[in-house]
Image (cartoon, rainbow, N blue to C red; front, side, top):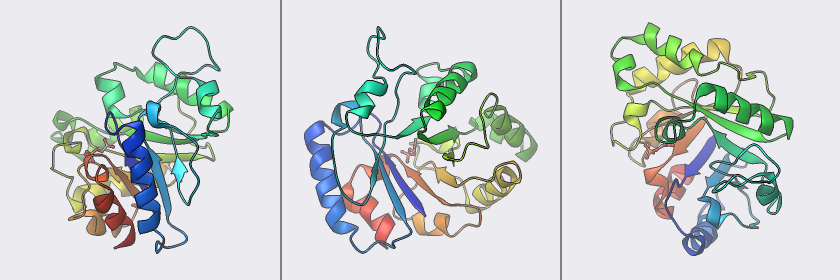
Length: 229
Ligand code: PGA
């Protein structure tokens, strides 16, 4: 299983360091095959060692240059970061990243050998139209994306379940993952209001290879519990 924590715009440099130190002591007992990822805000990226992978929530597709407010490869290389989140719905919706822009970013980080956690997810009005519309919508989010990329991990995160406290039901997760796995031979994470109360049930669903956790990852006890319980 993969357990990924997306801090979004939460935690500072200092609190991320303390979090990681505590987390490492708590996950000593984790199963050897389980993998833990932490995506802190860019200001908290640093040199850490331990049995987890540090990733970037975002970066611009350039080595360096005049891209005000962005970080590029040079800033990631300083800390040997080789993992990135691309396509998160908050970047698509709030930061207005288009599919074409996302595809360009994907191709850039693919060409630099990054492990990419690529996020897809439908809004509520599409979910309400039924499974056929959901699949059509989700598959359109692979436009321009090389889904055969060896270092690709996909995260299915229904937008209506993100940060709302309302996770998708097990049946919705199961049917969507099963349908996605017909086109996608890659690890497939679920994200959207995953918390200690539902994480066990979700990881037991066939076709779920791990969790991408936002709000409930911010507290170290809560995230560590999902990994070790
Ligand atoms: P959430 O966020 O766990 O707070 O719903 C998940 C995500 O956006 O990755």
